[in-house]
Structure formats: C-alpha cells, structure tokens
Image 1 (cartoon, rainbow, N blue to C red):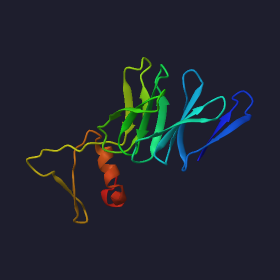
Image 2: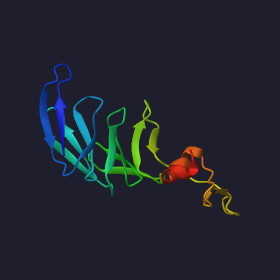
Image 3: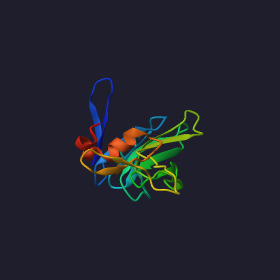
Image 4: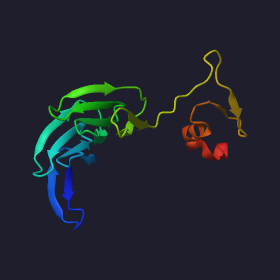
Length: 173
C-alpha cells in the first residue's frame, strides 16, 4: 500500500508515500525527477511530489489492477497498463484521462514509450488462436484413447503446451 523513497548513494530511506488502499505494483520518476507515479491493485494511479511526498492527483479510470505506470520522455503524459486489458494515457497537469488504447485480449503487464515519445509498445500474454473457420481443428490421437485438438497459433507449440500443461504426462512433452 506504500512506496518508499530512498537515497541511492547511501541507501537511506527518505520518506514513505502512503495513500493506495491495496498493493502498489509499479512506481517511476518523471524525467525531471520532480514527480513520482505509482500504479496499484486498487485500480488507481497516484501522482506524488517527489520532494515532499504529497499526493498531487489520484487517477481513476481502470476497471482492474494497474500493473505499470510510466512517464513519456517529455514528462507531460503518463502511460498506464492494466489487467482490464487496456492502456491509458493521462495528462500530468490535470490528471485527466486523454485516451484509452484497446486491442489486447489478456491483461497488459508492461508498456513503454519509444525514446522520441511517438510510439508505445505494450506486453501481454495474448496469443490469438488461428485455424480455418470452414473446418474444425484437427485432433491428435493419444496413446490412452484421448484426442486433443491441434491448434495452430502465432505462438506455436509453446501455446499448445501451455494450454494443455495439466496433461503433460499424457502428451509426453
């Protein structure tokens, strides 16, 4: 529920920042070092004054836990990644949501701006399954008489192995 601010050279604790009502998943300094952003399981982000530890804004808009928050290279925008499968861009000056980015089918666990701030990369466990719509996927006969679908995906056999990991002994992988 808290963040701690430390002196890097000495390891001395400078202050504790408290205000989230659940675990804090991520924290980052702004490029100028004056502001801290935190992301929490409580679905919020908080902007903090790095010098005083005062809560500046609470950013509300995600439906599930916020995995990560980071600043744009110019320090004017915050990017958040959430278990609600979205990314959000926030205005630092007002704390207002600027935009929601959708497209992941699983929780978004990480994200970053490009060095020039023009691009965003996001990470998730997405692994879209692809197979011909016109016919069902083929099945792999197993030694014990079970048949499991062979599903092609852009994650390859790792996806299939992960999907059926509980059947590892049967598959023999």
